[in-house]
Length: 245
Ligand code: ADP
Ligand code: MG
Image (cartoon, rainbow, N blue to C red):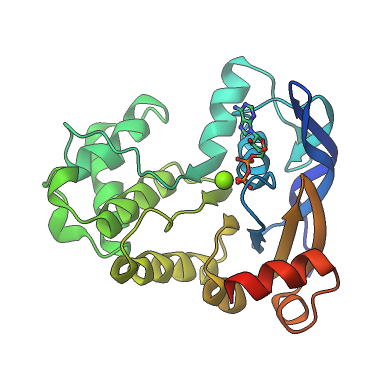
């Protein structure tokens, strides 16, 4: 089976002022692949995600989605944001809209779907993340884990080519982490292309095809979870793992 690259970063460099936060970063994510990104705080993980859906621009290097350079602006950029969904640590749901409305809104406004069709799709997705009974509630009536699952359903509603997760469980109480990771594992098994920044090593071991370890703005290791967890090559990865495992 030919596995095509879906996301490709080639020699990407990004600065914030004097600070060189992505240093010659090259990364290929194939269609259907799950890549877990780990590394210490400040190593550039969020910046990496944000450059892929162009929430941030880069100073040099190229980023390709499906073989095409990322669009700079306009319609192309709006389309990119639907093609590469993002799930953040904070769920960013609209507080004054119901769960169903939260999932339907962008389908109507961005995808141009009729409300009826959008709502039907939303209900399917809410069912998939185990929240069908919560469709008419407001975000504040849900737990953090439930809100994050709504955010995942909302991202899926755009029929994205890939989903980026930036520490999706970091803001959750411990007892809610697994319900979110379980939904992410199901997605991974369904063939969704995913880039996941997380400190959940159990998830990395069980769901990742590859683990990317970042430190100081660089990709230091890019290997299978098996290789990475049993025999990390770099001192920096060994040190990081010894602190979190
Ligand atoms: P991580 O997600 O791995 O913790 P980030 O990508 O958030 O790391 O940050 C990488 C580096 O870039 C850090 O040194 C951080 O302070 C810096 N940084 C992130 N966002 C900004 C910004 N908007 N302006 C200036 N510096 C930033
Ligand atoms: Mg971060």
